[in-house]
Length: 185
View 1 (cartoon, rainbow, N blue to C red):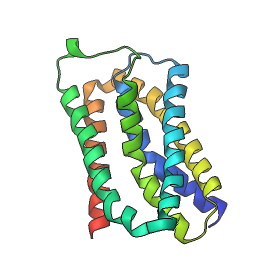
View 2 (cartoon, rainbow, N blue to C red):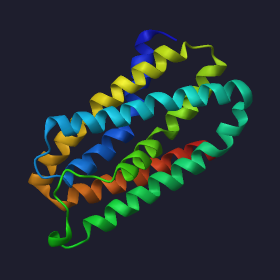
View 3 (cartoon, helix red, strand yellow):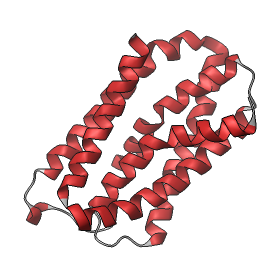
């Protein structure tokens, strides 16, 4: 696999994390760049780790990951998406505008958006790709996209309000559903 193909793969793997970051950014009033970089780093590290996990599992039992990844992605992403939609329906006075986000919720979101990278890692094990290069590129792309997404989400939140959070939730449910459908057909 060429380096160009790996870069495209890396950015494709980061799109769902980007959507989640926009949703997070919507909830934050004027996020600091340092905060966005920290969230980007968290997502990037998790997204870079999951292809390794998938690669090792792929070497041992690729059919296991292929059999369950779509269910895991559907449940986690849809659950987080529904949560985002429900949060967007709350009255404005209940909305938190602080930059403190639940670390556990951020980790779960990052894990939910990286399930597809685990499946990709399992697939890469079958075609003998250098997993260290692939995972590094995926982590860098995700770090960049999440950092931009947090900052962009804040701007979107100012411009269109809670509808952006609703949209982010719908995107997460859609991504989870798309992964599920594409793996079951």
